[in-house]
Length: 255
Image (cartoon, rainbow, N blue to C red):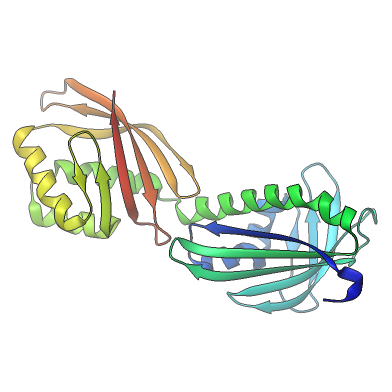
């Protein structure tokens, strides 16, 4: 790192999405604008122009220095006003590595002085939170369908069809917890569902309202009805989704 840029902000986060999905939000202008602000663009090739238009109206710009899909992008960064960083006056390096939970993102923003570094620490904390949310929202755009399929599987009387559905939507090691269940794999969950159907015949659960999603965790309100349509219970389920979009765990709360 040049002596002129001896100070730097370092920030590392985990994003619940595959690396290729994450990298797209660093190189595609439409996706770039989703986490910076409308009108922001990036020409993701060496020498390409970086333009950032913040929602409040201030602007920043830079030039792409390096692109190594889907692992690394480097670009210069500075403000149109010249304060506190002149255009091209700092360097941002973003590196992506695979992680068991999805993708590990490491950011280094190299700047010229300590005051500038300190003034950008919270800004990057906030900006990367926006980034991880828009990436996870895209990766889990079908979360509602996933949840509905989960509840349908619990009411499905055909064991083979139920198994096919669960294998499609859930990880082999899916963990399920509620007041009556404690399973740690699909192999253990499937006979548990069969037992639930035996002891509570005709009970169906369904989602009520929209799912609430934040960075791979989905909150769902549900209602359980008997075969005659009478309400038997209400509750909340917390779903944790993996980087591949499948369910890793479900925790159920009744009442």
